[in-house]
Length: 279
Image (cartoon, rainbow, N blue to C red; front, side, top):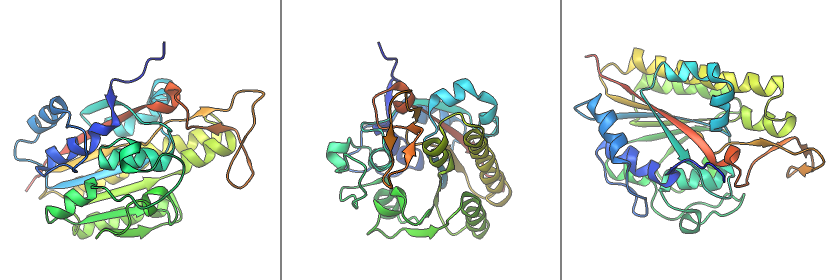
């Protein structure tokens, strides 16, 4: 019997919205009230800023195998939620569910395609509340494509390090209520080299370092705000079994993959933290 995580990723959008004190997207599953209670107890007067780091393909099993890679995340967070992502466990499908709170059949992406999502999203809910959103993404990634046609400010960065630098710049300027930062090299190198190749693991460790950098910047520059911070991957990944061959969209052989109902692909951990105002 497969040991799937208990909580569906469909709860994510409404949970973050409740913590922000705004209405959830129209099709979202209900919030996890117990999680909201825990985080709200740490910040009695609510959250007016949200920083979300979306690292691609960082599954729960990586925490179990390489816990030290997550120490920079744990030092800034107080709650970890074991989510089960959705099928097929590929990036546009999973981010579609994360930010709508709806199953793939409802939000409309059910394969590795990148159409603009037409139903109500977390970002629409934030914008309706009069707040500003920035998304720091690579130019053609899923997050850069499926949430277009909204009043979101997209910042395109070709490298992870550039994305983190841009996020720090925006934190210093303090013009956005919600900032989402996408990083991708663990996923990229998983496909190219496998999930536990040394270069791939280096990329995993960098994800924690990036989160540490981002939250440290929040603590320095958003002292007048209560900030919810989150380390929120879309899905996990696994190695291609011996004797099988997987190919990418460009015909290159993949040594690591995802998209199945394996627990390595579906079980993910999301880490939530509270940075309280100091002024």
